[in-house]
Length: 355
Image (cartoon, rainbow, N blue to C red; front, side, top):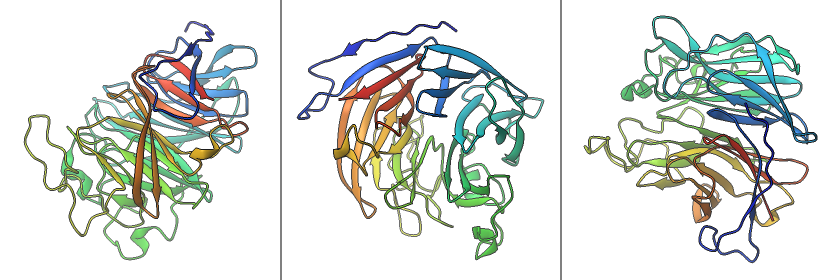
């Protein structure tokens, strides 16, 4: 991986929404190969994943990068590989497509005590059943009240998302050591659900975030040809895939059910056609104080950063902050001490967005 630090300000008159100021994009580092996720371990260091299996430590103090050894058995297949990374209280959590032989893989989660040289991971979750498919792993992670929430894609299998005896197409909730909370839906009124499942009926949710303002968890879901959405994770509920199509169609052009109907969770915001929604955060910081509480959502195909203002589960306003400036945006993180926004692109770069 090339160690190249570039400081470039991109100012265009057409790509940014009109603000009273002009946000500035600055490329911090590039040279990554199919990166998927980044997570701050302190104010100056981040961990980055590459789909091929590399875990990379980036130090912004001295512009150095280094690979961290690990023991994961990863199958890089299609959209699968080493995916999310999340640093929390000296622990590193990762999601990945676990190699289960003969082309089979699962969205799996592992954790290790942080070490800059070598990480000895232990699996704490594996989606069942294993599936021979390179599609729709989901794989985003967030922690709330010392519980780990994770998105599990439906692996391109459609109606499996309506089968709560299987993990694909669901949101799961587990303890940080992999144990199952005794108040999960299975132990209340969803007796036939897998014990880890918190919500069902999702397709390929590639964004998940905890709001520091109301302590709720929010999701972005990558739909089919249309039907991306942003919404809240809700206990024991069903987002409806593939009974519902959220306004989208199959890639063949055929319709997928209604956009929404009673009995299913209703999203806050839908996109038709698809923007290929990827990661998200609920913004909190000093750099853009006027954005506090808004959702910032990245996209792949649309190559945009979008801001969603909402209140009490109702959509208010969407703003495109920029579009087409830096390529396909895979992940977004906020530097806690400053509120500066960090963006990771498929093209292999980390960018800063600040005033």
